[in-house]
Every structure is written in structure tokens, then in C-alpha cells.
Image 1 (tube, rainbow, N blue to C red):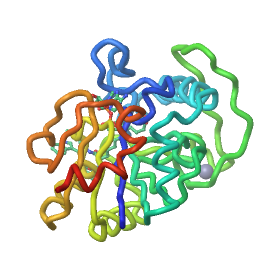
Image 2: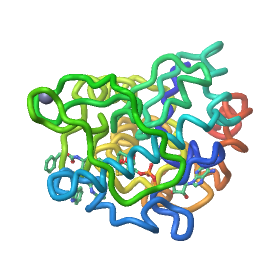
Image 3: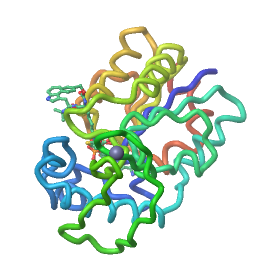
Image 4: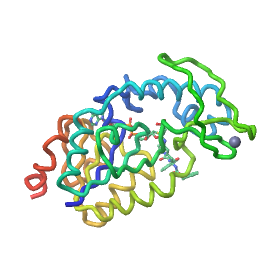
Length: 237
Ligand code: BJW
Ligand code: ZN
């Protein structure tokens, strides 16, 4: 059985990582996404963007995988599992998943915004958010940025290609914890459906995808994913 998991921020919510769009607790309840997570925002005020990502980097180092991540990792024992994630954390890998494709990059990798050189320098601890921190400068004069994908930027080609292949070859796609509004990632479940592959959505809330999927489970990831592989025959008939 080939299972492709497509995960978003809700996958890590029960690990204590805030989602983006929750009205009260979401990251973007406090900051404007197009100021803080776009290439234009970076050009306008890199010191604001850098401070925000240092805080998120610090937060992500202190969290642990939840039962949802662990369930997906355990599926590797009996199935060919591929994980396509929009998340920039490393919780799937830390739970033990092996074939993980990061569509929106990683918050554990940094590079120069001009020459692309990887940055391995120390990062200041940032337990609380602050307004501004000057980003380090590369020898070429560029600025060090997180290796994540902002609005208006292309997704990494290799991760995208592997994700498309993993979806196209899947027997079932499981979409977990994403609002399914950010493209091109949100096009992957549509691709599965167009190819006749069953899609199961796990999300406590309705999304624009909900009325098109094969099965919609209104549960959280840490509740629904343990045992889901065993439930598949009953769910898919
Ligand atoms: C639970 C739960 C629990 C809670 N269990 N579930 C108009 C139409 C179509 C496209 C566009 C358009 N205008 C512009 C675009 C393109 C744009 C886009 O899609 N915009 C739309 C928002 C309109 N896309 C791009 O720009 C992409 N690039 C691109 O298209 O390149 C081509 C191009 C190049 C040049 C010019 C033009 C085009 C890049 C997108 C990059 C997104 N980057 C971010 C930031 C990454 C770094 C970081 O982490 O800071 O990625 S934005 C943010 O959104 C982040 C996420 O990965 C992404 C998706 O969010 P996600 O994961 O869905 O989280 P939420 O918060 O939205 O949802 C959480 C869900 O979990 C909710 O449904 C909850 O109910 C649920 N949940 N608890 C299960 N316990
Ligand atoms: Zn450089």
C-alpha cells in the first residue's frame, strides 16, 4: 500500500506550534503575512522578518513530535509512506518518518539572500518575540535569511517533483491540518482526485477541499492518525 501524507500547520498544533490562520492563536493574528512572509516584506524590512523567524526557530527547537507524527512514522513498517509537508519544522523526521519532502523549506537551514551560501553561524536565543534584529551579513554583502519559501517565491524544484510523483503514485492521499488555500501545495490533493486516487482529509474545521474529498474526518491529527491505516478498508469501502 502506498500512502502519501500531505501535512500542514495543524499537524504540529498538538505539539504546541501555533498554526498561521487560527483567528485567535494563529501566528498571523498578530503580524501581517505579506509583511513578514513575503519576498517584498524581506526587501522592505529584513530586520523585522529576521527577528520573527529567530523567535519561531527558538520555539520549534523546544517542541516534540505528537501522536500524529508518531503514527505516520509507524506506518513505514507496513506501507510505502511518503510525507509531503508545508511545515518548516522537523517533527516528521524526529518522529522517524524517512521520505519527507518540505515544500516550503526548513527553519533549521539558513542561507545568503544574494549568493545562496549556507550559513552555519550561531543564532541568538529568542524565547520571546522582539520587533527587530539585524540579520547577519554574508561575505558577499548579502543578508542571511531563513531557507523557507515566502509568498511570491518558487518552491524547491526537487521537493516539488518528488511530491507530485508521491501523490501520483499513491493508493491513498491523506491531507492533514492544512487550510488548503496556499498554492501550489493546495493543488496536490486536486491532482490526486483528478487521477482517481482517494483523498482523506483530517481537520477539525471545514476547508475549501472538504466537499471534494473522498472522506472527511473532523478530528485532530493526534486523534485521527493513530489507527487510521487500519481503518482505511472500512473508510474507503
Ligand atoms: C488542525 C489542528 C489539529 C488546527 N489537527 N488539523 C491567487 C490564487 C492562487 C494563488 C495565488 C494567488 N495569489 C498569489 C498566489 C500564490 C501564493 C498563494 O497561494 N497565495 C494564496 C494564499 C492566495 N503562493 C505562492 O506565492 C507560492 N509560490 C508560488 O506560487 O510561486 C509561483 C510564483 C512565483 C512568483 C510570483 C508568482 C507566483 C509560495 C507559497 C509560500 C507559502 N509560505 C508560507 C510561509 C512559509 C515559511 C514559514 O513557515 O513561515 O507557508 S505561508 C504559510 O501558509 C506557510 C504554510 O506552509 C502555508 C499553509 O498554511 P497551512 O499549513 O495550511 O496552515 P493554516 O494555519 O492556514 O491552516 C491550519 C489548518 O490546520 C486549519 O485548517 C485548521 O483547522 C487545522 N488544524 N489544529 C488537524 N490539531
Ligand atoms: Zn552571500
